[in-house]
Image (cartoon, rainbow, N blue to C red; front, side):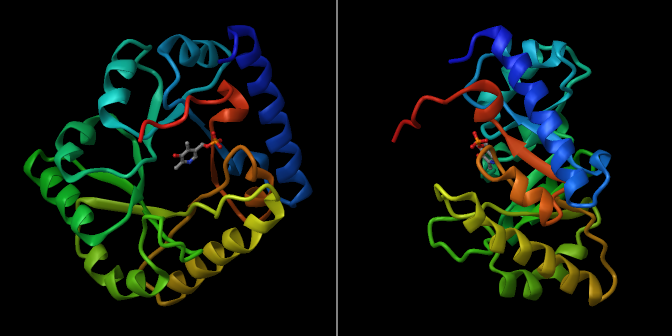
Length: 234
Ligand SMILES: *Cc1c(COP(=O)(O)O)cnc(C)c1O
């Protein structure tokens, strides 16, 4: 919905806000990367953001992302942030530098199997349903503790960290406990030994500041850059 010129302005405003928030939180601003969430937005809008210097983009549907990526400069980096269906893994694997949302053990096994067959590796985050909302995808913390050894037994997966979505709220401060809980859960998993999970993907347009305060290394922001999206088709 944005005009081209507002995309570069929105991007600059967002990046300076992210940097200021990181400094306020006593963090290095280089330790928080922006995933510009371009789902539903046309390639022309992505090109505008790319011309303004943005390299990393997030998409949530394979069939939408691949044609858009093919029409854009090959230097761009793509992350998959949606719920990945098993029958899309083969197509998706070579195109995404990071899968944010490995949300169940079967999917992890499918990715590993197809990666092995095609001699690839997949860099992934594990999605954790910290808030416990039934509508959300992801491992419950207990399920992930039970599955972590199985996940670590899949050598084709490079598990770089964890991802979560906070419950929707008008008040971004209400997202903070979810973000803090993801960081604390990560620390607990690391304390068991045998795993390091440096990446925390959390925070969107409404709550990226709270996420940065709580340790996000990747924030996934769409609306604040590209404007509002059409409502999803039911
Ligand atoms: C769409 C989406 C976002 C971006 O949300 P905005 O509110 O537009 O910033 C972030 N994460 C995921 C998983 C998404 O699907």
